[in-house]
Length: 456
Image (cartoon, rainbow, N blue to C red; front, side, top):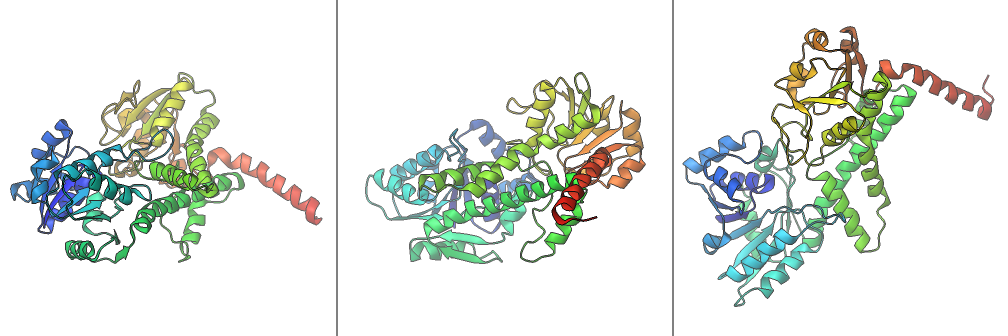
């Protein structure tokens, strides 16, 4: 099939590559000239494992092309995917201005039947809005269909997820569009769920909101574990064996970030508000996440006391491994707070080598984990890149001013770290810094039990 993909972000580019690899003729439309020139030369505008190699192969085989304007290819396209960004407005609502511009252009340029596929994450009812905008901007009344086809790509594995999706959701209003989309996805070995437009739009938001809920829930359990002496790793392992719960997204830490969960949870709260529903549960999920990053700073102050003029090392800046995306990354908030408290920050990230979009100004970027920890009073693991899992602890300790390690992602074995002479603290696991506090907390628990049940 002949396909146009409008928008060359994570979603658009991964979608375009996966569709081109299955024999379709794909053109990508990107309005930003810098990004467009990189793409034409086989350079990915962002870090995503395997994407650049796949991109270069498709360019050599002439299976994918790049253009600045949709009018160059619209008349040759049977299907148009819209994958433009829908960032959060100050209110939390999704900004649909980019999508509206594309729909307006499609309406003006259309000369025959098209299937317009909304791949961007959009509020419920956006597909109906898209249909109205396209229709209002047509010079003549050409037939078309709008399809909702939400993405479920994870940054760091976006290309794999596009090639091997867990499911395909198709919100279709006509048999013709449904048949075209089913033919397009014949290569997929996964369930294809066909539903109405609005249910399809809601599936995306509901999925991300539920995953965010699991993360905030396990983080709250971890915060309790910190105070009662339980081990969140063991708690999550026991919970995850229940098939009704599952083990995915039960890793406690410093909270979620990135371009999806923060944006989509806020947007769903706004969607609910527009229909007079107070989404109390999701508001609590967001509130928990907004506070969770502070745990590592609290632990830092517990172990070091006043951190003014002390050097703090941050390992990892991206919101998760496998990507260079720092949108809503906990690292930004942690660094800002350390700076506010007068600390000096040294950082290392395997793919981010300097300030990004105004973030990380005033910090020292280093060449490797050991250089970042040189002369440091504490190391905070923020992003669990593989490189940080293979550390020579004695080499690290030798270069530090004080051997303090705060594990914001619970990736290290506490016994190993303590055996190497470090003061170690993590999220929701018994560790050196909280043993005394745990004993005091448990005494309070016993005292309450004695009074209530007359336990002697």
